[in-house]
Image 1 (cartoon, rainbow, N blue to C red):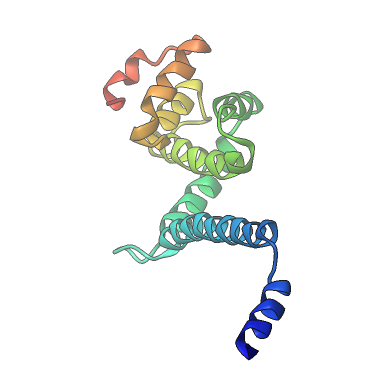
Image 2 (cartoon, helix red, strand yellow):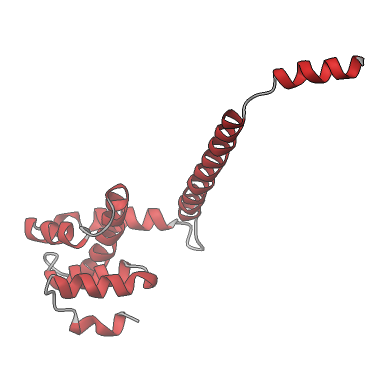
Length: 155
């Protein structure tokens, strides 16, 4: 008899189903967001780790961007902006920096007096991950950019 009265009191104070479902939904949403953010933070952390030569991937990117800064013309910068156009907005600056580093490396190693359109196309192809080559080719063909001299770089 005493236990029955406690059961009635406990049942009357239990949260409703919609409240519990809302808590569960937000728990999974926040946990998923933290996992996705952690994945990108780990990738960034791995880029900062020094390689065998003592410099990280980001150090080398910064080096090549600074070494080639004087070689960039307004036309080359505009072409680079066109090349990174399909990259989603939040990632565009990072992609632009890594592509510019590869283009700068190619231009400096060629002892060029300025970054040319060919340097940009070659650097863009090399800097683009292999898993995105299908989108890369589609983008180059859509913009009528001749990439035939660098076909061997696309797998």
